[in-house]
Image (cartoon, rainbow over all chains, first blue to last red; front, side, top):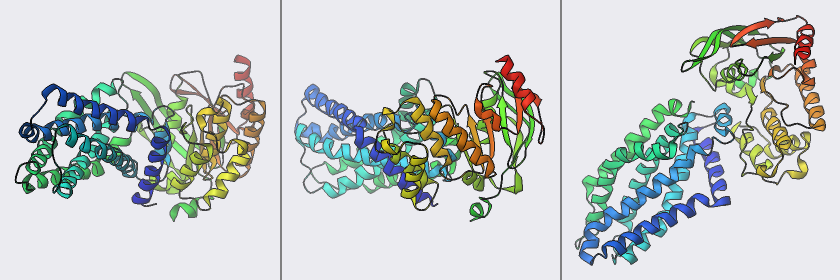
Length: 224
Length: 237
C-alpha cells in the first residue's frame, strides 16, 4: 500500500473521530478566541497599533491553538494502545505521521477561518485586497506549525508530563517560524501591503526542512 | 506480492539470546527459543516473568536490547507485517468508532479486498453483528475482547501472538475463542499464547514453555507432550 493511500485512510479516521466528538476543535477555537479578545480588551489598540502588534498577537493565538491541538494527536492512541495496531499494519511509519499532520492541518486551518475574521473585527484591521496573499502566509505558517507540532507530539507521547513537556519542546523550535510568519503577515497589514518574499521563502524552507526531517526520522519517532 | 506468495505457508520464529532491559530492570535474560511453523505454544509463567515483553518483541513492537529474532523462510521485516498479528492486554481498538468502523479501518490498512464482506463476516463470526453500528466504548470488556480478536484475525495471520487473550470473555466467548483457536491450529497458523494455567484453550497447545524472571525455566520442546507441564502448573495455580 502506498504511503499516500495509508495516510488518506488514517486522515479519514482522524476526521471521523474528531467530528464525532468535536472536543478538540471546540476547545481550541474557544481558547484562541479568548486570547484574541482578551488582548484586544487589555491593550485597546488603535488602528496603527493593531497593524504593528496585531500580527504578533494573531500568531501567538495560532501558536497556543496549535500546541493545544497537536497534544492529543499521539496521546489519544495511548488509551487502548491503538498505535501498536497501526505499527503492526503493513504501512510505513511516515503514513501514520502524515495522516496526523494532515488532520492537524485541517483542524488548525478551520480554527483560523474563525480566528482571522474575529481578529479583523476586534482589532479593526481591514483584510480586503490582501486575502489571497494572507492565505498563502497562513498556509505556510500553519503547515510548519503542525508538522513540527505533530513530530513533537510523537516524541512526547510516552512521557508522563506530556502536557507540559510538549510546549517546552515545541515553542523554542517554533520561534523562527513565529518570527517569519509575524513579519510576513505584518508586511501585508501596512498601508502599502506587499508580500515579503524573504520571510515567505523562509517559511517555505522551514516547512520543507521539518517535513523532510520527519520523513527521514519517522521510524524512530513512531517506535516505542 | 511477496507477502501474498507466502501468506498460506506456516511461519516459524526463533529467538536467539534475546535480552531486554528497561533501564535497570531486566525483563528478558538470554532467551533462545525456536518455534516451528504450525506449532501452538503456550507461554506460561507468573506475573512479571517476561511473557508480554517476549510477545511484543516477536510482534516487532519492541526492539530487544541484545540478541536477534528470525522468521523462517527468510521472510523480510516488511513482508512479516502482512503475516503477524497480536491480541494484547489492550484492545487495540478505537472507543469512539463503531465495531464496523474499527474493523473497516484495519481491513483497509491491511490492504484487503472486499472489505465490507470481510468485516460483516468477522462480526458475524465473533457474534457482534447485532452491535455492528455501536460505538466500542459502549461494549462490555468481553465484547471488546471478541472484537479485538476478530481484528487480529481479519487478515488471516500466519503467526498469531496472544497475550492473555481470554481475559474478560464469558462462557460463550470462551467456547467461541476455543473453536477459533482450534480452527487456526488446523489451518497451520503458528500460535504463541501467553496465559495462565487455568485457561481451557491451553489444551490445544502442542508445546509449553514456562518463563520465570525473564528466563526459560521449562520447555517441553517441539513434538514433546505439554500435558504434564500444564498439569503441574494447573496444580500449582
